[in-house]
Image 1 (tube, rainbow, N blue to C red):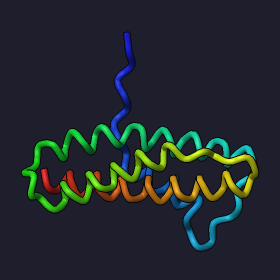
Image 2: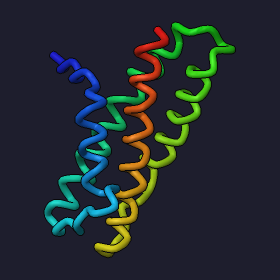
Image 3: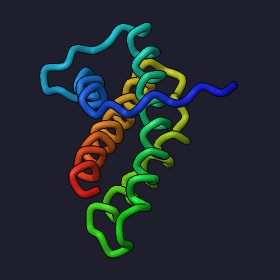
Image 4: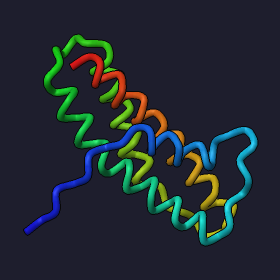
Length: 115
């Protein structure tokens, strides 16, 4: 029997993204970076269908809906990024994923207020 996906937690998403995006963020170890890459990808994979479901309930001309669906499109593109070969490449990809996670978290909140 398939597991139901855990509900998206925008607070945890933002906290995780901050580990890479804060102005004073320290560089993660290679092991931490691998964990963050997996966590960020998982957050995106969980948030995208949830945001799409919520957005589908809103009128087509609704601005938060349109913005959220644009972010979902970018999130899907980011999931296709190769993680890279070197630590620096992987770190840049992780930062891009973190930006997407932070944006998706913001849309979760915006849509939660709008729905």
